[in-house]
Picture: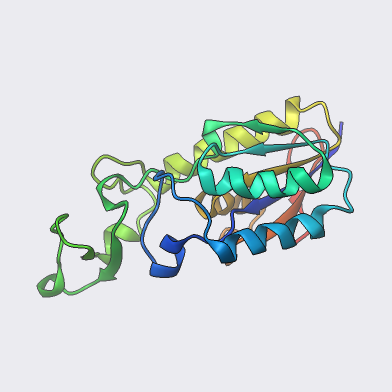
Length: 197
């Protein structure tokens, strides 16, 4: 059975504005994020979405709820749709640098200056966290399971930029910039995804 899947990122949070890494911290939307979620709901209202699958983190759930309130669809949570766990980097502002003299890796400081090579390595795991590769595999497994098993022709997924990047990478668009409340339309043909981006 073919399916249409609208995958969207949550609305803005104060951490987004401050450029602090949230990871799996449970940070709510700010006022701008709530407006963005309402605008997203208006855009998606014309599609016959049967259900919204969502990360259980507050920012994704609030965004999903705005869409659900507009279209009358149920929300089903799936922990695999949560953002990458960034371990001890969560809550910090992190800059990449190639100059060892600039390294500032003291977790007691708000701003960290980290080796860029590590930050850019998809297989690197921050202390207490998961690699980008692990996050992407988790998100891809979730969306594939949802596509295979959801009893609806059209569904939506409320998630995070890290998960969306992994999903978009499946269709050759992993470098796509993903803003708050941006969405993409995917098609599932029963075996693989394609993107109408």
